[in-house]
Picture 1 (cartoon, helix red, strand yellow):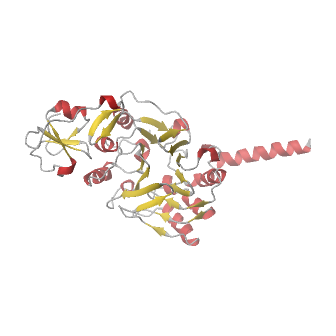
Picture 2 (picture 1 turned 120 degrees about the horizontal axis):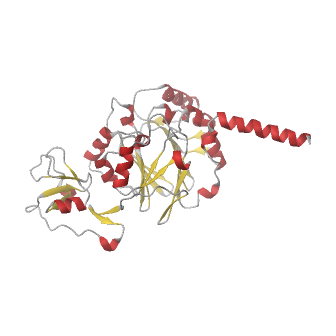
Picture 3 (picture 1 turned 180 degrees about the horizontal axis):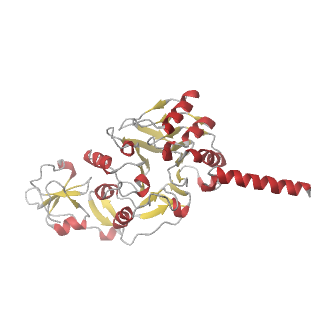
Amino acid sequence: MMKRKLWLYLSLVLSLILLFTGCQFLPTATATFTPQDSLAVHFLDVGQGDSILLIDNNDTMLIDGGNPENGRAIINYLKSLGISQLDYVVATHNHADHAGGLADVVANLEVSNLYVTNSEDTTASQKLIAEAKAKNVPVSTPSPGTALAFGGSTIDFLGPLSVHEDVNNDSLVLKVTRGNHHFLFTGDMGQQAEQELLAQNINLEADVLKVGHHGSSTSTGYVFLRAVNPRYSVISCGANNDYGHPHEETLSRLNDVGSTIFRTDLLGTIIATCQGDQLTFNKTGIAPTQPYQAVDNGLAATSNPAQKTPASTATAETATYIGNKNSKVYHLPTCPSLPKESNRIYLNNLDEVHSLGLTPCGICNPPN
Protein backbone atom coordinates (compact mmCIF):
# COMPACT_ATOMS: atom_id res chain seq x y z
CA MET A 1 0.00 0.00 0.00
CA MET A 2 2.85 2.37 0.85
CA LYS A 3 4.50 1.64 -2.51
CA ARG A 4 1.27 2.48 -4.33
CA LYS A 5 0.93 5.80 -2.44
CA LEU A 6 4.56 6.62 -3.20
CA TRP A 7 4.02 5.85 -6.89
CA LEU A 8 0.93 8.11 -6.99
CA TYR A 9 2.82 10.89 -5.25
CA LEU A 10 5.72 10.66 -7.69
CA SER A 11 3.31 10.66 -10.63
CA LEU A 12 1.67 13.83 -9.33
CA VAL A 13 5.04 15.53 -8.88
CA LEU A 14 6.10 14.53 -12.40
CA SER A 15 2.85 15.88 -13.85
CA LEU A 16 3.40 19.22 -12.13
CA ILE A 17 6.96 19.40 -13.39
CA LEU A 18 5.79 18.75 -16.94
CA LEU A 19 3.08 21.36 -16.61
CA PHE A 20 5.40 24.15 -15.51
CA THR A 21 8.34 23.40 -17.82
CA GLY A 22 6.46 23.61 -21.10
CA CYS A 23 6.47 19.85 -21.66
CA GLN A 24 2.73 19.90 -22.10
CA PHE A 25 3.30 21.04 -25.69
CA LEU A 26 5.22 17.99 -26.85
CA PRO A 27 3.94 14.42 -26.99
CA THR A 28 6.18 11.47 -26.27
CA ALA A 29 7.85 10.52 -29.52
CA THR A 30 8.78 7.05 -30.67
CA ALA A 31 11.35 5.76 -33.12
CA THR A 32 8.55 4.62 -35.44
CA PHE A 33 8.40 8.22 -36.67
CA THR A 34 11.85 7.82 -38.26
CA PRO A 35 11.91 4.93 -40.74
CA GLN A 36 15.22 3.98 -42.29
CA ASP A 37 16.37 5.66 -45.51
CA SER A 38 14.00 8.58 -45.11
CA LEU A 39 13.78 12.22 -44.19
CA ALA A 40 11.55 12.88 -41.18
CA VAL A 41 10.60 16.48 -40.40
CA HIS A 42 9.08 17.09 -36.96
CA PHE A 43 7.28 20.43 -36.59
CA LEU A 44 7.25 20.55 -32.80
CA ASP A 45 4.36 22.16 -30.97
CA VAL A 46 6.10 24.72 -28.78
CA GLY A 47 3.19 27.10 -28.51
CA GLN A 48 3.83 30.57 -29.97
CA GLY A 49 7.22 29.79 -31.45
CA ASP A 50 9.11 27.58 -33.90
CA SER A 51 11.09 24.39 -33.48
CA ILE A 52 11.72 21.88 -36.25
CA LEU A 53 13.67 18.64 -36.06
CA LEU A 54 15.12 17.05 -39.20
CA ILE A 55 16.33 13.44 -39.20
CA ASP A 56 17.80 11.74 -42.26
CA ASN A 57 19.37 8.36 -41.56
CA ASN A 58 21.99 9.18 -38.90
CA ASP A 59 22.09 12.95 -39.45
CA THR A 60 20.15 15.37 -37.25
CA MET A 61 19.37 19.10 -37.37
CA LEU A 62 17.28 21.23 -35.02
CA ILE A 63 15.98 24.46 -36.54
CA ASP A 64 14.99 26.85 -33.74
CA GLY A 65 14.02 25.97 -30.19
CA GLY A 66 10.94 27.94 -29.26
CA ASN A 67 10.94 30.12 -26.15
CA PRO A 68 13.34 29.67 -23.20
CA GLU A 69 10.74 27.66 -21.27
CA ASN A 70 10.51 25.15 -24.15
CA GLY A 71 14.14 24.04 -23.94
CA ARG A 72 13.66 21.20 -21.46
CA ALA A 73 10.61 19.83 -23.30
CA ILE A 74 12.55 19.78 -26.57
CA ILE A 75 15.43 17.93 -24.91
CA ASN A 76 13.00 15.34 -23.54
CA TYR A 77 11.42 14.93 -26.97
CA LEU A 78 14.82 14.38 -28.60
CA LYS A 79 15.83 11.87 -25.94
CA SER A 80 12.58 9.96 -26.42
CA LEU A 81 13.73 9.49 -30.02
CA GLY A 82 17.10 8.26 -28.80
CA ILE A 83 18.83 11.51 -29.83
CA SER A 84 21.55 12.78 -27.49
CA GLN A 85 23.69 14.44 -30.18
CA LEU A 86 22.81 16.95 -32.90
CA ASP A 87 24.92 17.48 -36.00
CA TYR A 88 23.46 20.93 -36.58
CA VAL A 89 21.55 23.46 -34.51
CA VAL A 90 20.16 26.45 -36.42
CA ALA A 91 18.82 29.65 -34.90
CA THR A 92 17.01 31.25 -37.84
CA HIS A 93 17.06 34.61 -36.05
CA ASN A 94 17.56 36.06 -32.60
CA HIS A 95 14.03 36.49 -31.29
CA ALA A 96 13.26 34.62 -28.07
CA ASP A 97 10.47 32.49 -29.61
CA HIS A 98 13.01 30.93 -31.98
CA ALA A 99 16.41 31.09 -30.28
CA GLY A 100 15.22 31.05 -26.66
CA GLY A 101 15.08 27.30 -26.03
CA LEU A 102 18.31 26.53 -27.88
CA ALA A 103 20.59 27.58 -25.00
CA ASP A 104 19.28 24.63 -22.94
CA VAL A 105 19.65 22.30 -25.93
CA VAL A 106 23.28 23.27 -26.53
CA ALA A 107 24.05 23.07 -22.80
CA ASN A 108 22.59 19.58 -22.35
CA LEU A 109 23.29 17.77 -25.65
CA GLU A 110 26.34 17.22 -27.79
CA VAL A 111 26.17 19.67 -30.69
CA SER A 112 28.62 19.61 -33.60
CA ASN A 113 27.72 22.90 -35.32
CA LEU A 114 25.70 25.99 -34.44
CA TYR A 115 24.46 28.23 -37.25
CA VAL A 116 23.24 31.74 -36.44
CA THR A 117 22.20 34.75 -38.46
CA ASN A 118 24.08 38.03 -38.78
CA SER A 119 21.70 40.32 -36.93
CA GLU A 120 21.25 42.45 -33.85
CA ASP A 121 21.95 40.56 -30.62
CA THR A 122 19.21 39.79 -28.12
CA THR A 123 19.24 38.26 -24.66
CA ALA A 124 18.28 34.92 -26.22
CA SER A 125 21.10 34.98 -28.78
CA GLN A 126 23.67 36.08 -26.20
CA LYS A 127 22.78 33.17 -23.92
CA LEU A 128 22.91 30.76 -26.84
CA ILE A 129 26.35 31.93 -27.98
CA ALA A 130 27.65 31.83 -24.41
CA GLU A 131 26.56 28.19 -24.00
CA ALA A 132 28.14 27.29 -27.36
CA LYS A 133 31.45 28.92 -26.44
CA ALA A 134 31.44 27.19 -23.04
CA LYS A 135 31.30 23.83 -24.83
CA ASN A 136 33.57 24.80 -27.75
CA VAL A 137 30.76 24.36 -30.27
CA PRO A 138 31.74 25.98 -33.60
CA VAL A 139 29.51 28.99 -34.37
CA SER A 140 29.15 30.35 -37.90
CA THR A 141 26.80 32.16 -40.24
CA PRO A 142 26.20 30.26 -43.50
CA SER A 143 26.25 32.52 -46.54
CA PRO A 144 23.63 32.20 -49.29
CA GLY A 145 24.69 29.39 -51.61
CA THR A 146 26.08 27.21 -48.81
CA ALA A 147 25.08 23.56 -49.33
CA LEU A 148 25.22 20.64 -46.89
CA ALA A 149 25.02 16.92 -47.50
CA PHE A 150 22.54 15.68 -44.91
CA GLY A 151 21.91 11.92 -44.89
CA GLY A 152 20.23 11.28 -48.23
CA SER A 153 19.18 14.93 -48.51
CA THR A 154 20.76 18.21 -49.52
CA ILE A 155 20.29 21.41 -47.51
CA ASP A 156 20.78 24.75 -49.29
CA PHE A 157 20.94 28.08 -47.48
CA LEU A 158 19.18 30.71 -49.58
CA GLY A 159 19.07 33.77 -47.34
CA PRO A 160 19.12 36.28 -45.85
CA LEU A 161 20.67 38.31 -48.64
CA SER A 162 21.27 41.46 -46.57
CA VAL A 163 20.97 42.84 -43.05
CA HIS A 164 17.66 44.54 -42.25
CA GLU A 165 16.19 46.84 -39.64
CA ASP A 166 13.55 44.20 -38.95
CA VAL A 167 15.24 41.19 -37.34
CA ASN A 168 12.54 38.94 -38.82
CA ASN A 169 13.88 39.65 -42.31
CA ASP A 170 17.32 38.46 -41.17
CA SER A 171 15.98 34.92 -40.78
CA LEU A 172 18.09 32.13 -42.23
CA VAL A 173 16.20 30.48 -45.09
CA LEU A 174 16.82 26.80 -45.83
CA LYS A 175 15.63 24.57 -48.65
CA VAL A 176 15.87 20.83 -48.02
CA THR A 177 15.74 18.42 -50.96
CA ARG A 178 15.14 14.68 -50.65
CA GLY A 179 14.74 13.01 -54.05
CA ASN A 180 11.90 14.81 -55.83
CA HIS A 181 10.59 16.43 -52.66
CA HIS A 182 11.47 19.86 -51.29
CA PHE A 183 10.89 21.63 -47.98
CA LEU A 184 11.32 25.39 -47.50
CA PHE A 185 11.97 26.81 -44.01
CA THR A 186 11.69 30.58 -43.72
CA GLY A 187 11.82 31.47 -40.01
CA ASP A 188 10.00 34.78 -39.58
CA MET A 189 11.05 36.20 -42.96
CA GLY A 190 8.77 39.03 -44.08
CA GLN A 191 7.79 40.27 -47.51
CA GLN A 192 10.81 42.55 -47.90
CA ALA A 193 13.22 39.60 -47.70
CA GLU A 194 10.84 37.52 -49.82
CA GLN A 195 11.13 40.09 -52.61
CA GLU A 196 14.92 39.97 -52.35
CA LEU A 197 14.84 36.20 -52.85
CA LEU A 198 12.47 36.52 -55.80
CA ALA A 199 14.83 39.01 -57.45
CA GLN A 200 17.57 36.34 -57.49
CA ASN A 201 15.52 34.19 -59.90
CA ILE A 202 16.34 31.07 -57.90
CA ASN A 203 14.08 28.04 -57.74
CA LEU A 204 11.94 28.42 -54.63
CA GLU A 205 9.44 25.67 -55.43
CA ALA A 206 8.72 23.37 -52.50
CA ASP A 207 6.23 20.65 -51.67
CA VAL A 208 6.12 21.80 -48.05
CA LEU A 209 6.41 25.40 -46.85
CA LYS A 210 7.01 26.30 -43.22
CA VAL A 211 4.89 29.44 -43.34
CA GLY A 212 6.82 32.54 -42.29
CA HIS A 213 6.24 34.38 -39.01
CA HIS A 214 3.59 32.02 -37.65
CA GLY A 215 1.14 32.91 -40.41
CA SER A 216 1.40 36.69 -40.02
CA SER A 217 -0.05 38.78 -42.85
CA THR A 218 3.36 40.50 -43.14
CA SER A 219 4.86 37.28 -44.52
CA THR A 220 4.00 34.82 -47.29
CA GLY A 221 3.18 37.45 -49.90
CA TYR A 222 1.15 36.37 -52.90
CA VAL A 223 3.98 36.57 -55.45
CA PHE A 224 6.35 34.68 -53.15
CA LEU A 225 3.70 32.06 -52.50
CA ARG A 226 3.13 31.58 -56.23
CA ALA A 227 6.87 31.01 -56.67
CA VAL A 228 7.02 28.43 -53.87
CA ASN A 229 3.70 26.83 -54.90
CA PRO A 230 3.49 24.54 -51.83
CA ARG A 231 1.12 21.60 -51.89
CA TYR A 232 1.35 21.58 -48.07
CA SER A 233 1.91 24.44 -45.63
CA VAL A 234 2.74 24.18 -41.92
CA ILE A 235 1.99 27.02 -39.50
CA SER A 236 3.61 26.95 -36.06
CA CYS A 237 1.71 29.09 -33.57
CA GLY A 238 0.16 28.98 -30.12
CA ALA A 239 -3.51 28.42 -29.39
CA ASN A 240 -5.37 31.70 -28.82
CA ASN A 241 -2.13 33.68 -29.11
CA ASP A 242 -2.10 37.45 -28.52
CA TYR A 243 -1.09 38.20 -32.14
CA GLY A 244 -4.07 36.58 -33.81
CA HIS A 245 -1.78 34.24 -35.77
CA PRO A 246 -2.39 32.91 -38.29
CA HIS A 247 -3.98 35.94 -39.93
CA GLU A 248 -6.95 35.52 -42.23
CA GLU A 249 -5.10 37.19 -45.12
CA THR A 250 -2.41 34.50 -45.02
CA LEU A 251 -4.90 31.67 -44.74
CA SER A 252 -6.76 33.09 -47.74
CA ARG A 253 -3.61 33.27 -49.85
CA LEU A 254 -2.69 29.69 -48.95
CA ASN A 255 -6.18 28.56 -49.88
CA ASP A 256 -5.97 30.41 -53.21
CA VAL A 257 -2.96 28.34 -54.28
CA GLY A 258 -4.64 25.10 -53.16
CA SER A 259 -2.29 24.38 -50.26
CA THR A 260 -3.33 21.96 -47.51
CA ILE A 261 -2.70 23.64 -44.14
CA PHE A 262 -1.31 22.02 -40.98
CA ARG A 263 -1.39 24.08 -37.77
CA THR A 264 0.38 23.17 -34.55
CA ASP A 265 -2.17 25.12 -32.49
CA LEU A 266 -4.87 22.78 -33.78
CA LEU A 267 -2.97 19.54 -34.38
CA GLY A 268 -0.02 19.56 -31.99
CA THR A 269 3.31 18.23 -33.24
CA ILE A 270 3.21 17.45 -36.97
CA ILE A 271 5.56 14.97 -38.63
CA ALA A 272 6.19 14.78 -42.37
CA THR A 273 8.06 11.73 -43.68
CA CYS A 274 9.69 11.60 -47.08
CA GLN A 275 10.59 8.05 -48.11
CA GLY A 276 11.19 7.14 -51.75
CA ASP A 277 8.44 8.74 -53.83
CA GLN A 278 6.09 9.03 -50.85
CA LEU A 279 5.51 12.13 -48.75
CA THR A 280 3.19 11.50 -45.79
CA PHE A 281 1.98 13.31 -42.66
CA ASN A 282 1.00 11.87 -39.29
CA LYS A 283 -1.95 14.26 -39.05
CA THR A 284 -4.76 15.32 -41.37
CA GLY A 285 -4.49 18.91 -42.56
CA ILE A 286 -7.13 21.44 -43.56
CA ALA A 287 -8.01 20.85 -47.20
CA PRO A 288 -8.26 23.93 -49.44
CA THR A 289 -11.39 24.87 -51.34
CA GLN A 290 -9.30 25.70 -54.42
CA PRO A 291 -7.53 22.98 -56.46
CA TYR A 292 -3.78 22.68 -56.21
CA GLN A 293 -1.93 23.37 -59.47
CA ALA A 294 1.46 21.78 -60.01
CA VAL A 295 4.12 23.61 -62.00
CA ASP A 296 5.33 22.16 -65.28
CA ASN A 297 8.24 24.05 -66.84
CA GLY A 298 6.77 27.35 -65.71
CA LEU A 299 3.26 26.55 -66.94
CA ALA A 300 0.62 25.56 -64.43
CA ALA A 301 -1.05 22.18 -64.60
CA THR A 302 -3.78 20.65 -62.50
CA SER A 303 -2.90 17.72 -60.28
CA ASN A 304 -4.40 15.51 -63.00
CA PRO A 305 -1.64 15.10 -65.65
CA ALA A 306 -4.26 14.61 -68.34
CA GLN A 307 -5.55 18.16 -67.76
CA LYS A 308 -2.35 20.16 -68.23
CA THR A 309 -2.68 23.70 -69.52
CA PRO A 310 -1.43 23.77 -73.13
CA ALA A 311 1.68 25.78 -73.93
CA SER A 312 1.12 29.27 -75.32
CA THR A 313 1.67 29.87 -79.05
CA ALA A 314 3.06 33.36 -78.41
CA THR A 315 6.61 34.27 -79.40
CA ALA A 316 8.98 37.09 -78.45
CA GLU A 317 7.70 39.03 -81.46
CA THR A 318 3.95 38.43 -80.95
CA ALA A 319 3.55 38.24 -77.16
CA THR A 320 1.09 40.59 -75.47
CA TYR A 321 2.48 39.76 -72.03
CA ILE A 322 5.71 38.24 -70.71
CA GLY A 323 5.62 36.07 -67.58
CA ASN A 324 8.44 35.13 -65.21
CA LYS A 325 8.74 31.39 -64.52
CA ASN A 326 10.28 31.95 -61.10
CA SER A 327 8.47 34.95 -59.61
CA LYS A 328 5.13 34.14 -61.32
CA VAL A 329 4.76 37.82 -62.28
CA TYR A 330 3.68 39.00 -65.75
CA HIS A 331 4.79 42.18 -67.53
CA LEU A 332 4.11 44.29 -70.55
CA PRO A 333 6.76 43.73 -73.26
CA THR A 334 7.92 47.33 -72.70
CA CYS A 335 8.51 46.82 -68.95
CA PRO A 336 11.98 47.93 -67.76
CA SER A 337 12.23 44.94 -65.37
CA LEU A 338 11.65 41.98 -67.68
CA PRO A 339 13.13 38.66 -66.56
CA LYS A 340 16.12 37.16 -68.28
CA GLU A 341 15.34 35.24 -71.45
CA SER A 342 15.58 31.76 -69.90
CA ASN A 343 12.88 32.65 -67.35
CA ARG A 344 10.37 34.20 -69.77
CA ILE A 345 6.94 32.84 -70.66
CA TYR A 346 5.45 34.47 -73.76
CA LEU A 347 1.68 34.88 -73.56
CA ASN A 348 -1.04 35.91 -76.00
CA ASN A 349 -3.80 37.17 -73.71
CA LEU A 350 -5.10 37.51 -70.16
CA ASP A 351 -6.80 34.11 -70.32
CA GLU A 352 -3.36 32.51 -70.59
CA VAL A 353 -2.08 34.78 -67.81
CA HIS A 354 -4.92 33.79 -65.48
CA SER A 355 -4.60 30.08 -66.31
CA LEU A 356 -1.05 30.23 -64.94
CA GLY A 357 -2.00 32.13 -61.80
CA LEU A 358 0.42 34.97 -62.58
CA THR A 359 0.27 38.31 -60.78
CA PRO A 360 0.74 41.74 -62.40
CA CYS A 361 4.04 43.59 -62.24
CA GLY A 362 3.98 46.58 -59.92
CA ILE A 363 6.24 48.61 -62.22
CA CYS A 364 4.56 48.42 -65.63
CA ASN A 365 1.07 47.70 -64.21
CA PRO A 366 -0.38 45.51 -66.98
CA PRO A 367 -4.17 44.98 -67.10
CA ASN A 368 -5.39 42.34 -64.69
